[in-house]
Length: 388
Ligand code: KIV
Ligand code: ZN
Image (tube, rainbow, N blue to C red):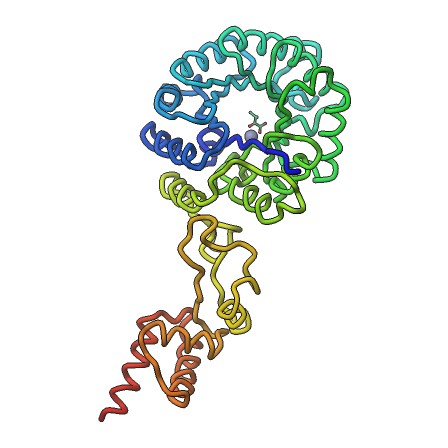
């Protein structure tokens, strides 16, 4: 039996908090449409009180993007909540996502509030949001550095006030996977009414564990994962949607969890977000990096040319990529070289291929990558040599 995991995409809110990224209304709408085609469950469209541009983007997405729930962020303050509600007016399925920090370090140095004051603010914020929409998510910012008993008290108050989703953010990417799994279990065991709401997680990647932490939470009962395309987000970013989706799909027999995503849309969504945000995808990024389906060494190329399963655990077509890529360089073998010659239309005798392969290796020592045009030049040279 496989359980469903809901995907809450926050590319347009936390993702836009990536230093240097600023998306205009048209760009945000284009990304939201791509996320709807990808079939995410919820799109966090922005933080309406933050700027007139964000208000406009959330309003337009709410009016034009159908399918997913459309969420807007609001601090636990009346003005934020009212502004979020206004921006969401045209949404088919609006959600107000309100938050307040619960860790002592945030209470002391940022909010300058007592635990009792934060508890009251959380309760009031959720009750206020519920006057506008039936779907309210409550996040305890810096949950993973909060006192667990106090955290449960705040979540209990939020549920009693009408929250429909309880989000557990690892705001500073601090927690370890086992520990996060234990925290989710603790919350599920201790918080009254928790069985009637969705438990969500929101992980940052400061120690490179956002995806692992999200998966650990899902294995311990979290039913919604918050993430971004290409792992964009504040500082080191958020859990990457494509990594989570492909981990759950590729290891479905292990996790026994599935999303409703149309995986064949992942590659296009990733490229769109990269081009509009201006954040280049690192070549060795899992799933969507240029090298994720590229094979350079001779041993690997030989295996993949015989059967891709030897070195590929994800078929490129799954994410909407046409094919894998055999990159010819100094580690490549004769087998891959001959296959490329055939692909380029050169059916040559074995001793000619041997000859060209020697020249190719010399060339590959000088150049990092040998392109098709270089191989054609070698082959043509050989042809003309034979003709003269
Ligand atoms: O990282 C965080 O705590 C957040 C909250 C607003 C959910 O982004
Ligand atoms: Zn965040």
